[in-house]
Image (cartoon, rainbow, N blue to C red; front, side):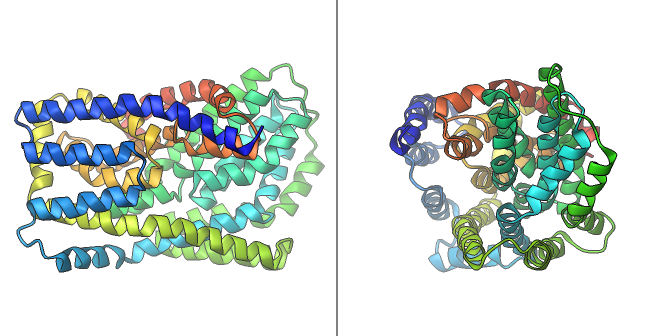
Length: 455
């Protein structure tokens, strides 16, 4: 398999899906204009944005064009100076410091020995269970999610170790790929979650409450994946449980196991804020890798820093531009008008929740999670709150939808990462995740129907 062929397939598959979505959105804009819900000028501008998205221009360029256009159309003072000021103030927030620190800490742990220690510990405790290594992989993803905040980092860190081990033990390749891709997505649900931090920043919702709300849904999904793994491997002999081996694994992985205890205990115990937790996470990961495990070389540290800076260079300008856009829309009353129009069009809260879920599942097919959260959360949250939904519950629902987006073509990042990391064709990876995708859709329905699980 060549690199070119491996990347061409998702692109070709995405063109067909993208064409359907492109036509559907243009038709929706035309319908809104015909019903008088938007002006011809707004519908035309919306069509321009859809065209830019369809031709796969960088999302920051699309949002930049949108912000400039909205500023020109709606702002009473269209001086560019005010647009720049809004962008500056958007980044001048203490909580935003947590994002680069969590990203850097996650990259350190993925490249270092913390992930390996977690998997070894979980494997020792699940020995003897049907599908013991599969269960250990899921649990390791859940624990790593609690210290990294990122699905991609979780999947790479755990998957790079677990996948070869599962293949050596005779696990089905498709099952192994699908499980790792699905369990890796726990990274944005189980706190601390970068996606939830972005939602909290963009909607001014308590990040601590969002973290608390994500615990039970995250554990529920992890439990469903564990049960599925056991059911699919009932006849597989995973060896015998050894108390001495489990004890040795705890001693060897003590420093890795203490990290989620310190982070989550500190946040929920009120000892430090989410931003301070990010700083503790980074400092702890650096000290443990540098002085305890001591397996990383200087070149590894340089790669971690460069990779993290590249990710931040894509994310932070998008946050600034999208925040400026939201400020203009709020100040000029556009957001409120949007909320009223949608509320009049869909009066039933249940139908509204279904419609928003379908929208977010579609967005997850074509948009990266952080970008979707930054752009859409300030627009959708007021609509859902106006319909009677709690902002924290909707934040968790939105995160769950976008988490599923990690497994849906053509842009599902976990699919692309699995394709490259495991050297498989894109179509094979998609087929591998289908059973887990069905499982996650059932989980999404549960999260939507039982808000008490969140709040």
